[in-house]
Image (tube, rainbow, N blue to C red):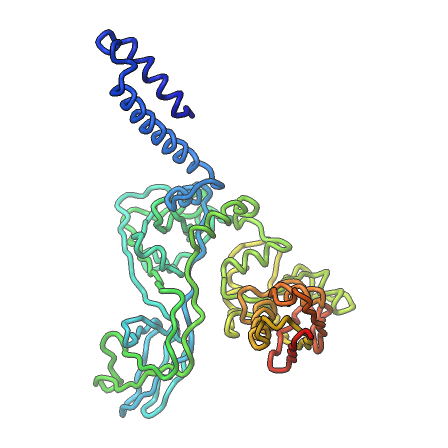
Length: 466
């Protein structure tokens, strides 16, 4: 890159070669013109250098550039997770009412919710159902000519809100096979992709890796959309979408309310997360899941997981103290999701979709055990003791509470407790403290056990240095 002085000198040298400008080479006018051109050149050089940096993941800044790197690697950003909770649907009419799977409701703020199971409610009865903050949009396409790797691209405005895609070809549902792994030419599968314009889409096979849709086929994609992190409080009324009739053909009389808070959702992968995760994507590419990769694979797929442990045949035999036939080629998974949500079936389904050879998966419910911390200490009088106690409680909850997204994955050790408390920054200037652990803080022998701090049983006593 040329410096300003070098650019000015080169400009004057060029001017000096022109007969009509030779007498003005050292004039104030040419000097000012040279400075201006040097600034313009410097700006162009900076822009060219910045554009070149977009070619590398580590220095890329623009969303479109990072998305292009993702497209080149076949990377799919983490989708958003819908909030969920329980609603009560009461039939106040005189005849039974049937609701289809995917029946939608709206809140007074116009936010969509739906149920996933079909139900029938007798007159005067009610049904409690899990509701998800989601809506369904259908995208359809006709295959005019059969071609390999036929694609359907979704609008960018929808792509960032898609958390699930159901694909039907001529009313037959096809399944997802990432990167067309372990499939032959007759498999009714599709792949999902993400392009540099921020659009998601589905891609079909070429009769070698996955079946190629035939000419005249009709493709329907049901897109499940969510706003991610939303909250609907308890006892909020919901309104059904569309006309609902009872078995007598009359308008159904329904009272629909939330009986738990509908929350726990999360947004999709941000630009910074996308950039960071792309650095490690070549290590596995969802082609191989083994050892610690099971945990990475699942926590990326289900960001609501707060604790997870995965173990295999050897660890199971060591824990049981004996060899067992049922342990052979089996992978065990235990996890806790935000709010205690049951995602066991989704986890097992995600692992089985990987089509790993000679592997079986089994869910083990987490065994949550409580422990407490006793803290005694003193701080300088310039600090408020109540503020210090609150900071210690917040730090301990962040590190050891089951609902904390920043929960430490390491076993609970007293040295870590000391570090966490000391990092609050209140124990300089002669301050001191001691900490003790009590309860079930050491659960390492049990593979599905996890310790959760019980703040109601903790004792934090803070005085002042004399």
